[in-house]
Length: 397
Image 1 (tube, rainbow, N blue to C red):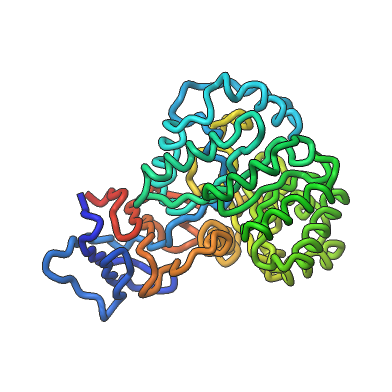
Image 2: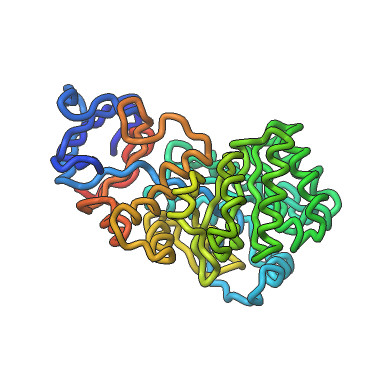
């Protein structure tokens, strides 16, 4: 087993921009040298990568690990087709099926880590019924996984803010116990009070110096009106660069010409978006957002929970879903989907020293692929996963 602080020397690694393999030297959890300046020292652990492609650690910027049934018994899906149906079904059944479960959360974090994910942003339910139990269970599981995967929590009011008195106070408590962002959910379509919800969560975020990450499922003109409202609140409160809108299905169905002003507003306020490319729901237009200068991350969303029986926490596979649903076929376009699962997600999480350059944290994944597009399309088994210079998975043995 590779010791956490033992230097590591990777030979015959292919970097995405290079044709010929090179060497990488890792020490103290950082990339210390690449190529000609890289040479093993006595005592280094050496691994021949055999020309495998090097990728940065994957970033899941939108998931719900507190809800997972991973590692537990199979649970039949009983919810109706609409968001309101799923919220009501979950509220009725969640305690009966035993979540939030620390054991299942940790099992899922292990699965995600083994797939090459090194950081996640998870939306944890906070409401008067569950209180802060989900926050506590996720925090405990994350503490048990230190050195393998880093976890950020969003305090998520799944059942609304205005419609559930007491939730706003719990959101404050959640941030004070470690949540890095305050969530929201369909200010118009669910809370039926968009101004009330936005005023509450932006007020809390400003007061607590927290970020914001809002679920927006509402489609069409109603959804677009809310995106405009979020842009306006971001400007008024000086929250530029600290707001994310998750899902934003309305942007996946509104023609680019009609959405141009909204896209300009998102770019100007540096609001990020996330997509999960789930089922038949509209998927955000990767190339359009890239050309507009809007940061797009992606995530697993729910994994084996009361919302869906699907999911496995594999972000390379998720990047393939994003590319496939966007009809991305050219290599350079497919690479944009991988960017959503890596560098773009790192921007959403505010990660520093992320990437594959000297001085970056040694969070990396090796896959048997010839280029980035093939890595996404094939999403092969991970040959090597490294977190903070520590080997998590080694299939070269």
